[in-house]
Amino acid sequence: MSGEFTKKLKNVFCDKPGEVVPTGYVGALDGIRALAIITVAHFHLWQQSWLTINFQTPALAKFGIPNISLDWLQRYGSFFVDMMILLTGFCLFLPYARYMVEGGEKRPGLPDRYEVRNFYIKRIARIVPSYYFCTFVYLFVLIIPGKHYASAAEFFKDEALWHQMFANMTFTQTMSAETYISTPFNGALWTVAVEMQFYLIFPFLAWCFRKKPMLTYFATLGISYWYIRFKVMPMDDGNFRWHLNQMPAMLCVFATGMLGALIFVSVANNIKRGRFTGILFTLMAVVSFLAVRFILRKGPGSTNNLRWQLELRFLLALFYLLICIGVIFSVKWFRKIFDNKFMHFLAGISYNLYIWHQVIAVQLKTHKIPFWEGDTLPNIAGNRPWMYKYTLIAVIAAFTAAVAVTYLIEKPCAKLINKLTKIRRKEY
Image (cartoon, rainbow, N blue to C red):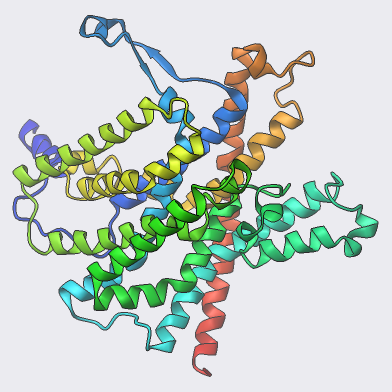
């Protein structure tokens, strides 16, 4: 009986020697995406609560580790937005990379108007319903009642509000400081706007990658480098903050993800799973994560945080890519941390978790939920009981909203869009 149990346990946690690495659906990336978004959400929550995570470890004190602190991850959690951006480039280009390496079924390309059209439809079905829903909820529940612009009676006369709404609806709010930096709308939506802007050029960029992958990659890096070094870095702090996360500044991260997909498929077609390769790639993932930890723990010193982040963007993107590839090829028990049903579920709701977490965190604190006495903010007063209660309530509320919007708005709308476009495709 114990032998049978041991065998089952081994099948769950150990790879079969010589097993082929699948290049279609890569489940481990779901877990990485979910953890990246949770890290960003944790950062925004920490901004409101100031609840630091610090575990005392007396058993490890003799080894020079009296405690384990996640302060570095909380302070610089926003840097993991770039991990999300990298995964977008990786996953979008993966079908093209498979065709380039493995051949087989024809993949989407620039000359095929039907395939390009289908790409845009899929992106719209995935992104737009939840995004528009959030924008209109914010408008009618918070913006108009809060009189951030004109009153409800003067709604149609307020040019500033119409300018903001037009920018939000067209995913162009990052192109103006008034609609990006100064907006009272959900600040987290800038990332969605940048991704949608990237989708516009992706079919052309993918076509270039298929023709000349390395030339296209370095050309894309060159565009990013020129924009960052000669356009953004010389700016004053106000304009710098506006241009920090513009799409050209993110191109190096998107392109690194695309190249990563090609590297992954190439490696997967030339090696098979085994004990040595599993250990090697596991170590690569762990060491790369420790490198990220070292960089972020070191901090910017006296340097402006945002400028420091921009200077590190490409380097961190390379480490993020090494983490992803390392996890994909890692030993089975380690890979299972990222590739399991719970992580797939989290990845499924992660988009809406990202959209809603900051809104909910800010509104809870604005409305004194949970309640606190006095005029001093509880995080400033060091009210730890409030910090714990607030964090718990915010986490529950954010995940509840993410689940509700995913299954009541996103998925039904995506299904409807796909159904309608399939009918129209026959008439195209």
